[in-house]
Structure formats: structure tokens, C-alpha cells
Length: 181
Image (cartoon, rainbow, N blue to C red; front, side, top):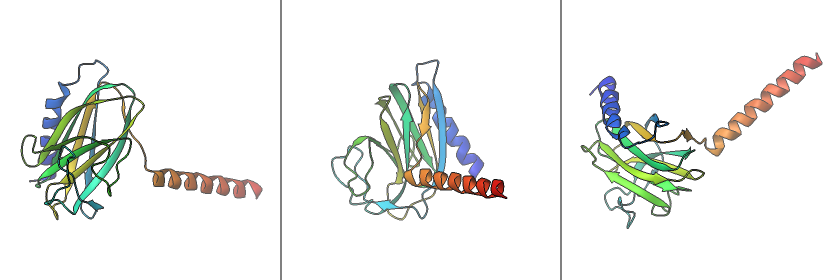
């Protein structure tokens, strides 16, 4: 399966879920990534009742988001040639305690390589979407589409803020040195 066909499929599946959004102010965002070589965890069951005995060391990507409008949001993920799973956490995701703060989970929405669900979200709360695979040693490229009645914003990780701050400090230092000459 080539990349163009993969993303066309992901977009088509995402379009199916846009119908869940009933507001004229609806937003649709798509994130892409690759779990290959990523951090691993023992994933939970989709109902967060227990930890998997099949997916004890699955690679994952986590995206923290915030929203500006409460309401129902839909989440659809498509993996490139592997069995996917998708989880939603409220407030915080801790890979060492993956049953904690779980809101929704999905496996095999339309096929083995798609996962998705709809969930009521509250404005002002942080949510973490975790994309992973069903089996250990399965990883790869994916597309995640989120749709809802409000603006959906990815929240940078603390390391990103630190790097931005250091970069700005270096720019300020360089400007001072240049002005002092």
C-alpha cells in the first residue's frame, strides 16, 4: 500500500465521522506520525478493566490536546498495514499506569488497521490521545483525525517549551552581542 492511498483512506474514513459534529463552528484536524522505535507500554483493554497479555510491549505515540468548546468529538485512526488501537485519557497519560484516567478505547473500527470512537469532552481540560498497535513488535505510520464543535489544539510537551525558551534566549543573547559591537 503506498502512502498516497493510505492517506486517502484515512481522509475518507475521517469524513464519515464529521457527520457526528452538529455545530457550524466544527473543526477537523489530522495528525500523522510513526510509532516505529517509539516508547513502549503494556496497553490496557479498550474498557480499561485490565492490562493486555497480547500487547505487553507495544510502541505508541501520545498527542495531548485541548479544546475550546465542550461537546462530542470523534477520533479516527488508520495505521499503514498493521492492527491499530486508540485510547483517550483525561488530564494525564502515564504509560506505567495505563488504566488510570482512561476515557475511551477502540480496536477494529472498520477494519484491523482502523480504530475510532466518539466521546464527550469538556472545554478547559487536557486530553491525551494514544495511538498504538494490538500486538507487540507491530509499529508504523498512522494518521489520526479528530473532529468536533470547537477548536482543537495540540499542546506541546514540556521539552518543546524548554527548547523554545532556550532558542529565544540564544537569539536575545546574539542580539545583545551584536548591539554591543
